Length: 115
Length: 116
Image (cartoon, rainbow over all chains, first blue to last red; front, side):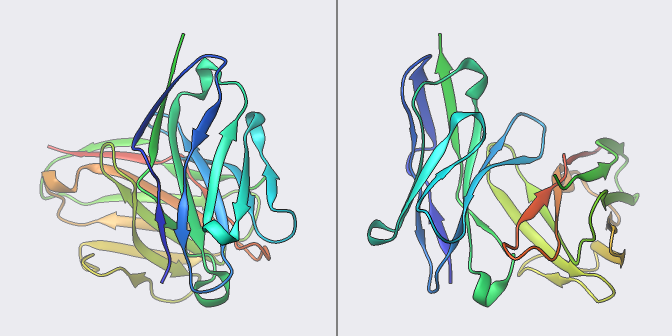
C-alpha cells in the first residue's frame, strides 16, 4: 500500500524567501512521485514528477524536487517565492507496477506568501 | 499538453434531483478516468476509477447507485449524482490517464456542485 505525508498543512514565507514543502511517502515498490498545485476553485496542475533517472527534478515556475530513496522523501523547493506562488500544493505517489496510474495524495500544504 | 475539460464548471440543483457532470479528454485517448471529490480545505478523495467500456470500480464507502459513472468512449466519462442531497455539495474533479508509460493523470478544472 502507498501513502503520502505532507508535513505542515500551512507554510508561510516572505516574498523572495526560500520555499520548502515537505513530502514523505511510503511505497512497497519503486514509486512515481508528483507535485501538483491547486489555485482556488480550480483543478490540479502538475508542477513536476519523478519517474526514473535523475533524482533532482525540475518543474514549472522555478520549482524543483529531489527524490531521496533513503529518506523516502520528495520535498519541493523554490529558491525565491513569488506572490503568485500562493496556492495549495499536493504531493502524490503512484505504484505503477501494482496499481497503474492510481494516485494517492497527501493532505496538502497551503502556501502563503507575504509581501 | 494533454487537456481535460469538465462541464459544467458549477451547478446548483434542488434536493432530490439528479445532475450530470461531463469529463472530456480533448486531445488524447483516455483509457482510464478517475473521479475525485474534494471537501473544503481538504485533499482529493478518489471516488471511482473507470476504464473505457467497462464498469467503474468504486472506492470503499462510495455508493455506486448514487454516483453513477459511465465511460462510454475513450474521450468521455460522466458522473451522475442521483437524488442529490445537500451533503453531496462538493467540488468534483475528474482526471484522465492515457497510454503514457509514466501513467500520468491529467486533471480537469473541477465542478462545483451546490445542492439546495
